[in-house]
Amino acid sequence: MSFTDIARSVFEALIALDLDDLDAGPRAAGYLEPSEGAWAVIENVTEPYFRDLERRVRLRHEDEATALCKGIVLGLYRAEQRGFELLEYAEDGPSELAGQAVAIWRRRRCNVSLPRTFVEKFAPEWACLTR
Image (cartoon, rainbow, N blue to C red; front, top):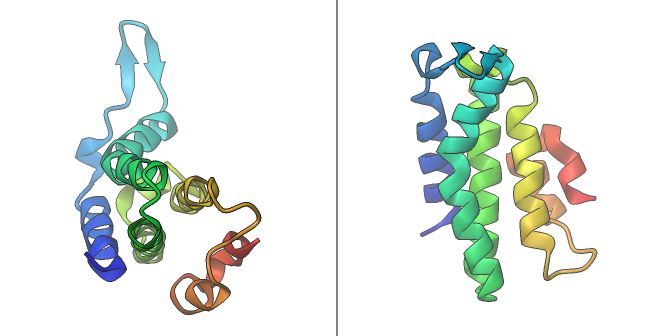
């Protein structure tokens, strides 16, 4: 699967979320803030991609891990640029999750970052990912 296919899948999963998915409010254990609820929903949707990335990195499937990381980053970037509803409550969520994806990808690559050309072309506002 290409990184663009992965990005499309991540993007579509995120923009399909709406405020009805935000399960915030009173709970038996206390009150769940909308920001916490939004983060939980976004992390739940992206979690399978992160698990797959972890697995591919652990197995040293370098090309697949790189494509998956790029796809996650691009999908999150596109969702942030589109401004899906839950971002109102989970500000900086996509960029922080993109940073987590890059951190997972880097585990076996000391001091290696995503190619600057990729970030400049597909996620120009997230230049920090190349550091």
